[in-house]
Each structure stands twice: as C-alpha cells, then as structure tokens.
Image 1 (spheres, rainbow, N blue to C red):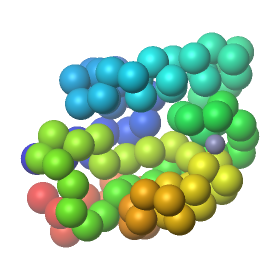
Image 2 (image 1 turned 120 degrees about the vertical axis):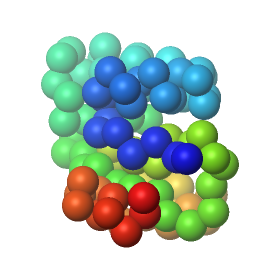
Image 3 (image 1 turned 180 degrees about the horizontal axis):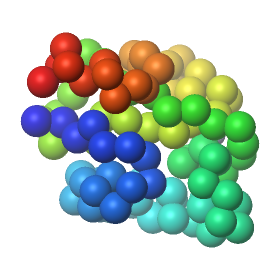
Image 4 (image 1 turned 90 degrees about the vertical axis):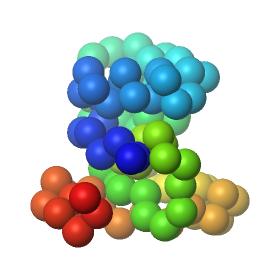
Length: 96
Ligand SMILES: [Zn+2]
C-alpha cells in the first residue's frame, strides 16, 4: 500500500528512503538549504509550499504525499503527468 504519512515526518522519510533514496537525499539537501524551515518544497527548497496527495496509479510502496511549491507541482503535472489533490489526512478514508 502506498504511504500517506505527513511530509518530513520520520515515517515519511523512512518510506521515501526505501522507495527512492535519491529523492530522499534531494529532500534532505533542500531542507538543509532552508536552514530549518520545514515549510519548503521537497524538491527545490522554495517556500511557500503545500502538501499534495498523489492520486491514480502508483507503485505499491510509493510515497503518495509530497510537499511542493507551485512551480514544482506544475512541473510534475506537466512532465510526469501526475495527478494531485490537496493533502488532508481526512482524504485518506476513501483510499484505505
Ligand atoms: Zn519547488
């Protein structure tokens, strides 16, 4: 089952580390550059950023929640054809 943990939580990092170690490393560097500000995009480190939940087909152990700025969100939608909805823990009920 995909992981729906809150971005930057310990569980989220553990899941991302297992699923895509290079993405986990990119995120660590982005957070390091942000100097402790956690309200930043997991890819580029810009703020503001919001949490989004990936919907549609994905690998069974995918990390399905991302914290993204508008720019990176739009890139993922345009280039990777990924679909997102705003992340609210309440959304999970319909996916579990
Ligand atoms: Zn970004």
